[in-house]
Image (cartoon, rainbow, N blue to C red; front, side, top):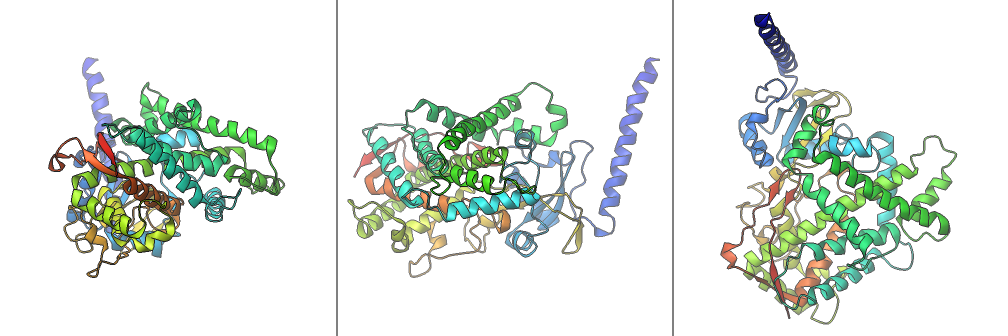
Length: 494
């Protein structure tokens, strides 16, 4: 009896492995799927990946299997695109076929396909089109987005002055500014940096941003069916996502009571007006669930990403004081000390613009991109990729292309300057991704990064607590997102 109990599960495992191998060989027969390492049952190719730096592992595999290869992330069939040509061909030239959003279970379990970032099909089209139009034509109230960002930049500087040139961690204050910009766009309201509701919202966003790249979250996304019912950090993650949604819904209730359809004040007013206009349209996606989730997406994508870029940026400038000195000189010469920077100044500040681009290239904030899927069986090059297959367009492989950016491992603003010192554009600058799924907040993010960084450097010099050569610029965590390391600095008024 005991022997039978041992033999039975062993046979089940052996049969499962044989079935898996048969299916795997069949799918690769005749060159249908791109080449790739042979996976193991259940865990796939996880043993070939360094979970502390998955993008580096993916680039290493590309050297062996080419720019388009197959990988099994756990049980999930995935095709990796490595290098500019493969990424552009898929997301631009074949964009309609690679249009789907891949599943991120820890988010899908809560947001259930609503909103902008993780929706698909007609819902995604309606939400993206509306959000893009609203952000581009932001005429609510009497102030443009630029004026709102400039106001927040001034508030940011005033908060920094309160540190009185003493050592401090800039994370919190840097987070407040972009978060308040999103609040202004969504609610037509900005909060004092000590407002309790604002602090609560900031804490929710910060904690989930940190957790999204954690090993636990990566494990959950690979085997959600198994882990979903177990205790763990995913429960708190989902609760925080819901709490952000409830925060937004409270603001929606306030807007419903004071809405003037002829004079929309903000994103919520525009959405509510559109909802009323389409109330008899059965195909409309303008409901409160989409409104709350769109707002949550704007907070998640627009707050911590900008914060992390700025935090990395200050660290890199302290690591390279000669670069900071050149930015100071250019700002003083073009703008001076008394006038607030504006977007018109951008064209006159080629070196500052090059520094901003190099910061974003070098930190590669979203190295593996958000996952895509193919929405139908797709012939790509000499391969056939089945409908629903997850696609990973590896942005780090484009941003670190050694032909476009000589010595890509080195922080060097000259990567974005021509021989005459003019700013040099390049199609290889893809921190916001490419194609129809590119970040809808790219314009806002570029504006914030420029106005915040130039305003900070117009008013302060950066002083590290250690020698520049001792500054560690390695990410704290490299996962879906590169998380900047913690540090303190002194801001010396200029």
